[in-house]
Image 1 (cartoon, rainbow, N blue to C red):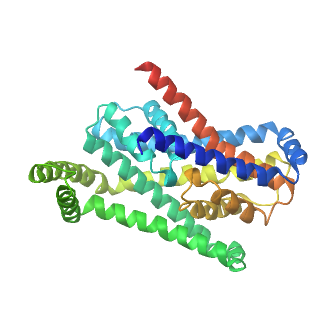
Image 2 (cartoon, one colour):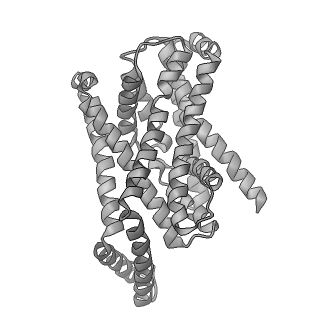
Image 3 (tube, rainbow, N blue to C red):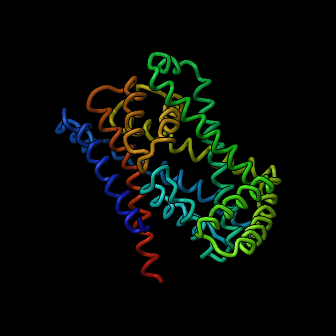
Length: 336
């Protein structure tokens, strides 16, 4: 299946799952839920959108700071545009796997070497995952609400698996980024297998090309990962960005005239939701994230207001980002 067909298939799956989510969210109280959405407090709705923009802005700060190591004139404007465009590919691919290849491609177009672009993307992803896991640890340690998980084995297992998946991803990326020997052995084996089934010619030449690329890549990775102050600053930037995103359900509750939980509780509950969404194979974690949101926030919010908040939250954090990314990609296409 070529790339265009894959994209179309992913979008069709996403559309179908989205329709199912909308159907189950609206089927019982359609008019009531729509009225709740129409009558929201505009001030708190705007704050919710601003929190989403803050999340993307903090991601842009981290991306720009890493890119500046290799290209001093890479600007925050370029970083923000890259984050929003990458959001589109994250949104339409399972496990958000389409984001990193586009990110590397776009950075290369901005005059970074392919090894430098790969370094920026991987290190940025590692520090983001660390921030996500740290917030997950804080949420799990915050035992007052972990009682909810004790009463529901499925939720408990999903949160634990989500935490482990994110932790394993961090360890694997650290090993791939820092351990040249493992990479060389792994890639040598892959090239030999591909050569045997006639998918790769000139085996020795390909191995040499990869070794040259790997040496350059690890040199760049060493610069990034050995700067401890920068590494901690990047984790902190993503940490603040995630907190901005995690507070959106709270401001949406205020928009509905509710004050049934605190900012800390919103951060804890959102951490649980994001851990569950980490391993849902459908684009955007669609289905899993909505289930997690309705279950966790359902302990604080009841009835049509819960459905309304979930739909607004999903639009702001997912569909709004995807729409902005698609618009910017369309503009970029016209600029060529």
